[in-house]
Image 1 (cartoon, rainbow, N blue to C red):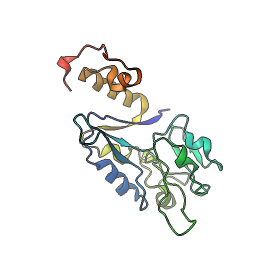
Image 2: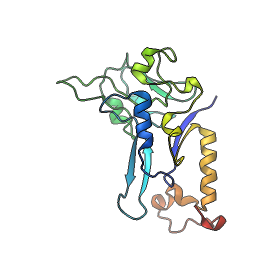
Image 3: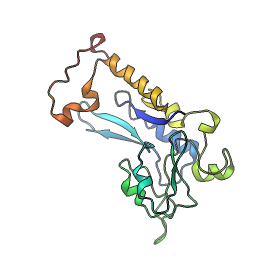
Length: 207
């Protein structure tokens, strides 16, 4: 069984926010919620990078670990979803998630924040696939239709990859090799203070 994953190639992301728009349009996301957002590092500085961020559907998801009512669950394809009928809106998952994926739909009247909302990998929810109830709560179930998430399909530069984790990893690995970059892509120099990645350029170091 394939395990679904997202990977964003920062070398290709142009901060067009097409993925954000595609997600909101496809799933009719509640006002005040961005299931996906684009983050730019070192904005305005030479060498700035942008990356599209959403729920990463972690193998050991912290949101699942802290939820007091266990509304989160993982599908056979590795997608982390939640049941809004069980959710009590406590917000623990929002604090636990390092990606800020679970969000409150809006700040309502005093003491009323509503149910949490998050990226579903366009896999719907616990209701029947393609049902009106499923779409109203979670958005379109594209996986049940044999399609990939709208955000990845709409990415004009193919920076955002989604699908079987092994396939996505192979695509990204091929790109890295073709660019002639090695360890520095993963941040080894920053993490361990290495001055030299020690990887010889491939194909003249072209990107």
